[in-house]
Image (tube, rainbow, N blue to C red):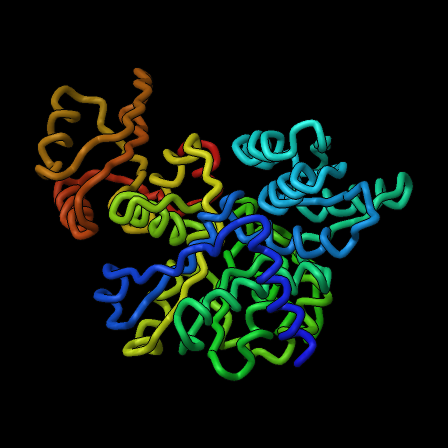
Amino acid sequence: MTDFIIRARAAEQAMRDVFPVTPLQRNAMLSDRFGADIWLKREDLSPVRSYKIRGAYNAMRKQPDQDLFVCASAGNHAQGVAFMCRHLGVKGVIFMPVTTPQQKIQKTRMFGGDQIEIHLIGDYFDDTLAAAQTWCAEKGGHFLSPFDDADVIEGQASVAVEIEQQLGRAPDNVILPVGGGGMSSGVTTWFGDRTHCLFVEPAGGACLRAALAAGHPVSLDHVDTFVDGAAVGRIGEQPFDLLKNRHLSDVMVLSEDRICVTMIEMLNVEGIVLEPAGALSVAAIENVQSFVRGRTVVCVTSGGNFDFERLPEVKERAQRCLGVKKYFILRLPQRPGALKEFLGILGPEDDIARFEYMKKSARNFGSVLIGLETSKPENFVRLFAHLDDAGFTYTDITNDETLAQFVI
């Protein structure tokens, strides 16, 4: 443990040759809301807008004679490696999933320039990882794991070194997003039993929780790539070895829609742009608000590489999560005045966002797909009560994932 502390401190000092300390900012809104002293460790403000540059640099600086590095990444590790390839004047071959947001691909190209080449392979990160490892075994080069590497973990631990220096002490709690486990294991190891670390994963990629439940790393049957920075189907062996004694009760799993609520709030209220994985730690506070009340809490905002073309989807998911937007199918009688009767039931705060109706003259009823937005969830209680009283037949499909894929 002492050796790890020494190496993590040395890694943090080495970072200063590349970029300044990322800010640790007290957030008044969150502190007031949850009755705690809440700070944000702004890794979204690093040169590549994520903490991944730390592990990449630390691992690469320890290979001074290597001139070719190979990696697989859902985006942020790729940017860190690309940035360091140009900085160190070495070559890089970067494998990324085909589903990676274009913003992350473009930024990787921008950071690496002529020093790198990019291969888009696989729908999921684990497929991309296998392809990168195979290429490296056949062609040569040093493989840089995004998380399953002692030097990478050590570099990510520099986040904790900075937190303690900036705060002047170890915080009571640190909330850490988990993907492959590189940062969470590094930060946890640095703080030891001085800080209670809490972990948060997206529902579509809860690989730490699955590993703790099984007692060893396991591969998830399915991974939802929406939270691309944490969409990992199997936690790393080395990170898990450092986290294996953690309690399941310290691991939170959040729905992707809930994460969207936090992304929208942080953008609209605080002016902070966070990608889905970057919002995980802030979104998790609500789940442990009684536990953190009165404590000093640090949330690591791990990344801000957000493609604004995804903003409409994020807003949509956030509204559905908050209960202020719903979709339903209405059976509308095919008689004069039926539509006017329905419109008369809508309240002053109800706004039609979608309306699709196909009149079929051979039938007495037509099906209408309706999307409604309103200001507060209880407006839908009133609306549906009035629809029942008026004898309308309808089906709420807001949370029907199968139908949503086709009609929403």
